[in-house]
Image (cartoon, rainbow, N blue to C red; front, side, top):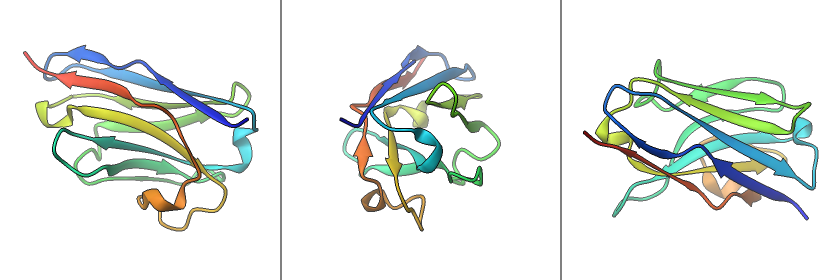
Length: 123
């Protein structure tokens, strides 16, 4: 059974950092494209960052230069390093995996999702 489990969320002050982790089980992450999405209260889910199985990355303009996506295929893990956090980054963050993803920010192209982890940026 394919499963993704996020961790690492929490409360952080503006300007702070968090690293989100996503543990994959039941499949080898090597062959999958991965994405991080977030959903703030009252808003639609949006793509934050994505990485192809070949290592190509992409970032939403709102997080470019502050967030870094990475993966450790040996550990079957995906990470999202978030620096210089802003209150508008507050959301539930989800990781997702897809076999063939053309548009990394299109949530419908992903097959498997984690349950999400809450990130709150507030003083």
